[in-house]
Every structure is written in C-alpha cells, then in structure tokens.
Length: 191
Length: 191
Image (cartoon, rainbow over all chains, first blue to last red; front, side, top):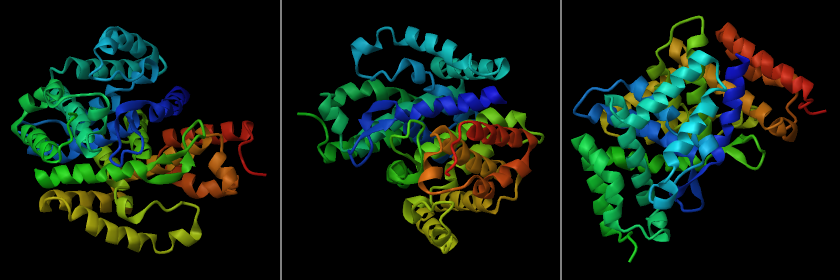
C-alpha cells in the first residue's frame, strides 16, 4: 500500500506539465491533468452516442493512464515535427521507469493499458485516442484559436489530428465538423 | 450533439475553480479539475485493494460528476463552518441549472449520479466519497501541510474528513494512517 500511496503522491507532477493549448479564457496553458480530466468527461458524455458498444470503465482506464509517461518524458507538441522524432523512444523509456514504481502486478497492468492506448487497436483504445485528438482540437477552438495562431497552424494542418476521430465514428465526425464550422465563422485561423 | 459539445466547452471553467489545498510544490492552489483527475487515479489504483467489489466504471462516473456543480456554486472549504451553511441549497440549485444544459436523458443521468454521490449509500458512492476525502487529505500532506497551517487546522480537526474513509475499508484506513504518521514525523501540523 505504501508504494501505491507514493505513486499517487508522485503523480501530482502531472498538474504542472503544460501542453501547447490554452484554457478557454486564454490566461494560461492547459496542463496534462486538466486535459485528462476533460477527456474523461468527453468519454462519459459521448460513449452512448457511438455506433458501437464500448466499455466505459475500460475507456476511462486508458484515458487515465494514456499520458502519465509525460511525468518523465514531458509533453511533445503534436505539430512539432522535430520534437516528434524520438518521442516514441523517450516515452517507452519513461514508461519503464514510471510503472516500475508500482507493485509489480499493478505496474504491469498500467504498462499494458498504456501500450493498448498507444497501439489504438481495441475498440476502447480507438475511442480513447479519438477523444485525445478531439479534446485538443476542441480546446484550441474554445481558447479562440490562440495556439493555432501562435504556432502558425493552418486549418489544413489540423486534419492531421482530426482525420482519426472523423474515421472512428459518425457522431465524433459531427462534433469535429461543428468545431470546424464555428472556427471558420469566428475566423480563428492564422492568416 | 451540439448541446453535448456546448456543455463540454462550458465545463472548461472547472479548470479555474480553486480549492483551498495546494499542489505539491506549494506554488498555487489545486483546481477542481486536478482534484477530480487525481481522484480518478486513486480509484484506479486502489479499487482492487478493497475488501469488497466495486464497479470501476461506475465509480469513475461518480467521480467525474461529483463536483461539477461547483461551476455555478463555487468550492466550499470543508473546514469553513460559516461557508458550509447553505452549501447544500446552493449546490442543489446549481445542479438544476447545470444539468439542464444537457439533452434531457443525459442531464437526468448526470443529475442522478450527482445525487447518488452526495447520498453516499451505494457501494461505489461510498468508495468515491472516501476517495474525495482521502485525496484532499493526501494533497495537504503532499504540499507539506501548507493549507493546514494557513487555516489553523489542527490534527484532531482533520478527523472530520478522515473518519469516513477509515470506516469504509481497511486498505483505505492503512493509507490514512500512513499519511498521519508521516505528517507527524515531518511536523506538518500548526503549533
């Protein structure tokens, strides 16, 4: 129990890992903990709208675990092509280190769930991964395109992140299309 | 779908609602979103240690919903006796307002889950409520007792928050006892 407690105390650091996107009022960047929390609510509110069945508990498990390795590896911006080189290796090493802090059985479970999310092959991993992309995209819309303009991310380039949720399910596609329509109307894209 | 999306965009405000406790490095207060995220990991890592069975998906659902009403009602400090007067009424009104923003069936579900958590009678609600108290207590320990000293919260007074998780399960009791022992050794309590 002490090792579990120590792990729960350690992961407080997740609250200080910043992503490139902003919270809605634009006052500061969003943290990994906030991103993960928000993804949990996307899953809860959208899972019954899908054209397929998902296990909500398993989806939420994958969401809770999916970015924890960034405690050691840091966040890599999705549009930073240089940063993306070596990201997989950094995160694999970070996972080895992080999950070794847990009792062996629990550590092995978290490690397997992280790999399942990364592979994106099971139904729940596809849904969780689609939400990861959707939440980031929605967050950029919700903060009035601040990170898009700051980083010169043109509308077409965001398709790198939105093609996946669009392919996963029609309900998710409709959410993404609504966000594009609103971003167009509000002229949130960089010149 | 647009109403669900609007709700998901609205609840971004949860990231700006501050609790009295601090993040571990003491640099700022913890937010509701971070508290809820952290509770999710407490549930994931502790649910198999309990002496009873819980449905993890349902526990995580209750956790995701439990504090959302604070978007309209604000956070009430657990040791603020004056603030606690009227808290229930404020939160009931906030729940009516908040969940009405969702499609009727989904809003009714969230409203019911919020009531289930508040009542604390089902197995999952008892576990989720125990985690709510434990995470707050652990967070105060993890930030070196800063909020305890700032607000003059003596060791005995924290029993108001820890008696519940201690009563729920022996594994949770052992976590709480470890935290008290460490807080004593590190002399984190106010004079």
